[in-house]
Image (cartoon, rainbow, N blue to C red; front, side, top):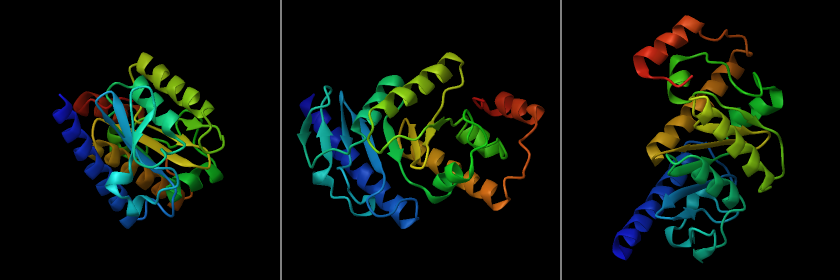
Length: 224
């Protein structure tokens, strides 16, 4: 079992470094803003505090156990509590990404569509790949109270059978998650692109009609 866990940790290290490099190269992150984590067994790997995501070193990633105690690597990101609580609240989550993506942070400064839906459903792929994204009121980076707010949102949406894959932290950017790195990246990319489209069009586009969204539910199983 230990060998299998060691293999999983090694693979997760490689995935976190790969995703961090990809996000940096494509302009989704800058400087030391943002963090990435992966669930491994009962514990987690997470980027170190103040690490530059484009220049991660695999052996310096923080490994924490089921109790949140650090076992290896540099000091864990100050958002560790938030990541651990997301994994606990959503059993399907195995990879979490937080960035300060430009258009999504700009959206919080310009004004979101609503507190429950930061963006209107203006494209079919936003409805299918992203879904509802609530705004989390501003708290300082790493404030543990944010975890309470995020997990309450996750629980509320699970209860209404419209699970969420992301939240938007006011003035700080998105936190997204998924069952694997590719799924989490897809949510982040579609969310940032939709914010860019909405801001570029001066927030004028009307949402898709109820009938159009119902068709996406029926045809593709969209959770909206």
